[in-house]
Image (cartoon, rainbow, N blue to C red; front, top):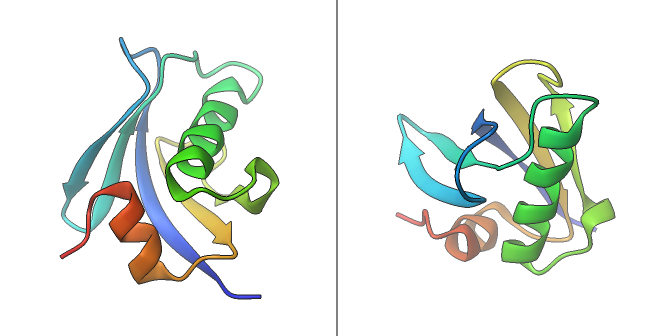
Length: 90
């Protein structure tokens, strides 16, 4: 099964869960969850899974668990398709 990785800059405690766009090749995402007990990471994975139409278990943070900048792995979708579903295709 194919999969891909995407770099994300996450802002927790935002007003809404949203994918803002892309800045310098990094996906900018805001979530309402606080950065406590992995809740912001969980919200990030749920948001990406919903937009990419894959299961939540197919999305995982593989680097930067406690950092603002993270690397997220998405299984079952190619990079171009993922970027298109997230609204950041070239």
